[in-house]
Length: 251
Image 1 (cartoon, one colour):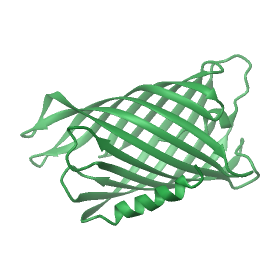
Image 2 (image 1 turned 30 degrees about the horizontal axis):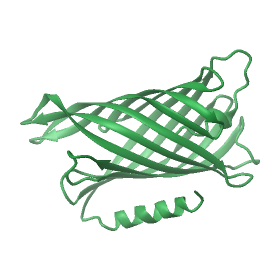
Image 3 (image 1 turned 180 degrees about the horizontal axis):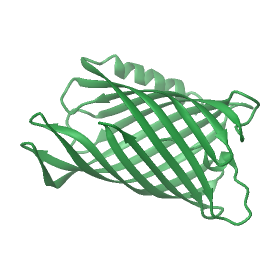
Image 4 (image 1 turned 90 degrees about the vertical axis):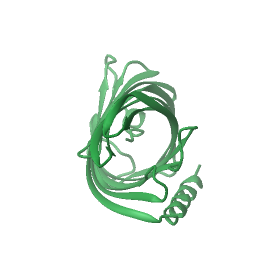
């Protein structure tokens, strides 16, 4: 796992080297991620994301903990995503059952690493001749994320601790309905965060590189991100452990 992060960055650089027609765009991404601890082994996942003129995501799921460093989540997400048909902007719906596996590792006294694999089943609303249709097209998507986080003060991210997070995620499409954009996206971001009791704040920059369905067309989104992660514990007389919930929350 320790060598996977540099290999992922190397692969991302190779993909970016294949660019042909690239446009640049500026975005603002705000996200609110929550978890509700139901028991020692289960928690409720909810997160919401909004990018003006970009997309809206509402996602929910149920997480099962097999170890404090390993968990599985499955759930459903609803998206509203803009697209263009005959130069007319449309906002089409997407229904997305999803599942993921998350493992986090202690690399050193200060450095922690997340490995996440997420699978999306994407039912995307069809459109033609400037109109949305009642039908949906299905395809698969696999997301592979590596994230590093370390505190700027002390050796552990606890209440009142500022921290730095650097992450890279590759999103790959597959299925019979995928034609050109097998590489869906590459996301590379750097954020500065603050950990408080039960909540964390992050703000920073994301380079979101997207391949369009049209062959050899790409968009590089320079994105300012502001993310809030909130933990709720529905158990009685249980103390929140930041490593248990807040650490593995990524958009």
